[in-house]
Length: 508
Image (tube, rainbow, N blue to C red):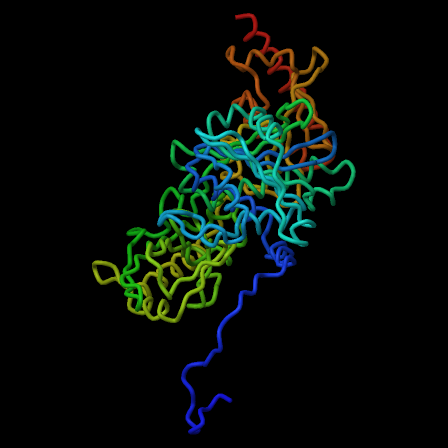
């Protein structure tokens, strides 16, 4: 009865002791249904690498012919010994995090991995302990939470395989039975990898842009032949700063507003107005503009929400230029709550009330900022038509990642088009380059490769000046479809001139 013998409401619930009720083993199955997207899952693993003090992280797709067989995340962090590794493999096993840690709930490694793979293996070593490993098979874990101890020799062999990354300490996370890999149709591995790596490159570049902007932290995405260890593709992830415009869309910005939030205290809002019509990737290349207006919320320099108004207002086209950076308070509070997947923040009404009176040091209000961002958008829409750059087929493999990023910044990209790939190949002596239109490939005569590398070792992304110019010259041939007499004559002209120039370069 909720009432006492006297008829009064009981304000506390009476108990008669307690008993221990551990979770059922099938609780592991629920970890695989947390709704982690592929890119968000990899980002969660990279968070762990950052917390371990890693300076270099490599995400490697292992390929065997046309099959993708495994995925590895390798870092040069401090590593773990047997005891620490056992704790890491327990759901919620870590009881405390440093104030500046990116980890939060102790479930990310397991939930992110088992959302996409049937097998999770972690191999690690420290300066003072040998390589050690644990493996979770979903099927076994669902039965009794059992975790396999990996053979010590295998652990050392895998660490040795990546001794260019792991010297004295580091960690390797291995996924097997990756469900997305098993759905790839025969002959579609290249397309899948291009699309997936592009998405991953954008996601990591955006959500970890503050870390990537530092000189001492790097993430590389690699496709590796599992048998020969040859790198089939290699891209360095570049930071994508959501506030990385050259000039603001309205003078006087950015402005720092202070919102007094009950239960937290002063919260700083760094408000920006993007320049209208921007084609830069940090503005247009990270998702629908309506989804990217609003608050960009950071926790310990990690972007945990990329746009959205958190219920304080509705998204409107006229606010597409408005973006506000907000760093979560370091101390725990009841106003801001981070989701387990670190893909959003929930807030209480106290935050909305704080926004209503937020102002900068001169008294300029946050409400006035929103009005000015809307005005900047409307004024741009009323201006006379300006020169528009045509959409281009996106650049792909064989182009240096920094050059690729610039090309994507400067040229609007055609959606759904296979990217333009560069490949050095054996060509007849009268050709400097050739096109494979159906495959979007530009073939370059390998006899002249050395002329464009200044004695440096050749790599897949070499000769950036040559490839950049050829991309600008030849991209329309893939965009416009079938050849024409005029375009064929242009290519014959360019072939003749480039062939002569290359021969001059070699003979110098």
